Length: 332
Image (cartoon, rainbow, N blue to C red; front, side, top):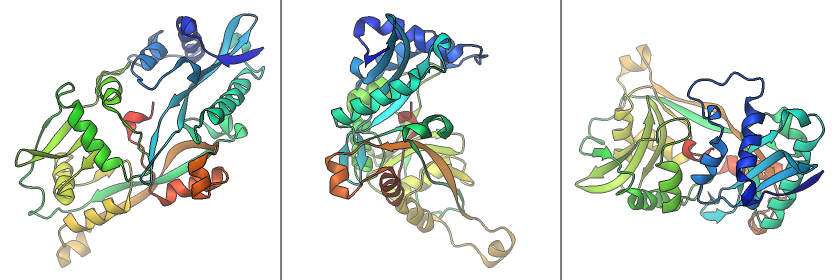
């Protein structure tokens, strides 16, 4: 058994390994990305950060039998940019399971990430599978808001569909200005926006972003999924932008897949003061609910040293205390 980096001339062989591993004795839903034998290849083609050495493979008798891909995800953390990795495409060929090959690939990935300066890694999976290799659960709050909005906020704003070509530069700028002080969002270059966020995904269409404007000037953007606000950003008139987007999401019982102190303060500011009868008979409000944010593992590095982060528990506390945010478009 040998653990090493994937070579570029092995991409097709590796894609077949991932496909067979994920679909073996499994009924794949129609329309799922797993229905495509080349879904791993399609994924890395849409990832401008990808390099072959990010995939760590286990080779037995000249055959690829297991692998882990460490997707580079530089992240905004409390006003800084820090290198991190999202673990994905973890697999073992069905004929080679229960022989420790996946654990060997994970151990190699940890050594490689540490050597490359990734200060931590995260993944979306089961603790029972990854906990033994050091990944621990992170949870932060989601927000559900059932509020009557003030009539005087957000009414003068408009929005339009973002053009994937013409608006990529604008979205890159708006995103960086809004997310640069948050903790968790992936750093998105314009190339990343074009290739990964705005392009069609393997199992469906591209996310539909909309630009929010005030007097012809862009002041934010958003992406909705029904009454759920999947992503939002503002660079001016935050209360107006938030109220405008909430109305677009239906106005009441709006769900946010994140929570920050700024969001809670804005929800208070843009909501109307209810009448006495409303308080008694049909009170609205804001509900906070714990939500899974993946499994995390500390590697260490200059930023961690500076922040006094000595282990995974310290890392989880820092992320939670700084209102960790991960936008759905960056999860895969």
